[in-house]
Image (cartoon, rainbow, N blue to C red; front, side, top):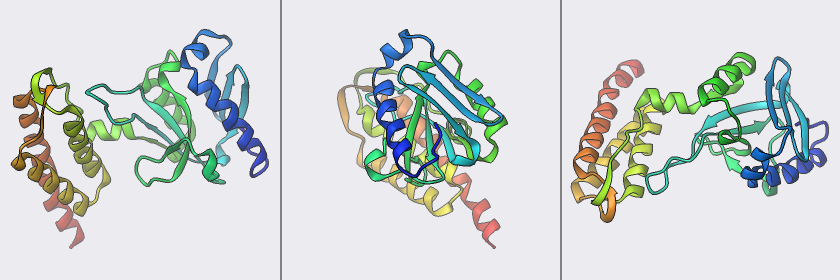
Amino acid sequence: MVYPSDGHLLRTVIAVGAIGLGAVALVSAVRPFRFGIHADGLSIRRPGLRQEIRWDEVDTLVLDEPPRRDGYAGPPRLLLVPVQGVPRELVTARHPVDGRPAIELLVLDQVREQPEQVSAALARHAGDRFVDLLALRRDAFATPDLTVGLRGYQMGRVDRLIRRGQDALMSGDASARQAARGEIERATAAGLPVAQRGYSTYQTDTVLDALVTALADHQPTDRETAT
């Protein structure tokens, strides 16, 4: 994708790209399909979309995955925040950290490469324009693989609490960690909702206790740094 003008080509790219991203099975079945990462930028080649994006047109590229739904993780996705910004009507995503309007460039189940391979190539060529939130979140607190069974904790509620804690750990902000810790402690003290099918209560309690501990362990360092 190249953006030589402020509006026309961006609208064309998103209009066509939305069709491609919305038909994952069709895109995956039709050849040629190519998403290239190279020294000059990104190359996208797929039915209806043949564009180049230069690195100087990229403000931020973010590799992330959407929050879990009903215990299932969606495939990772690559989001673009262009230097020129995104018109409101063309926003297809938001930057997961600061909420800036973004464009969903790629869902990684459309390519053979693993997220780690894509991340390595982007880090090598995009430099500090690229942020691997998958890796940062995993390093902060690995997403647990909780067992699902009868009469367990409501999965959506647990997933949101875990993501809240991970993002707070990843943020580097002491007040965010304190707020996340308080939210988790209040939720567990009040009793997490139980569903007909949900996460193992014992495993979830153990994971949330560990997350609260991680959030607390980081706070003294921040206070020392601030002083």
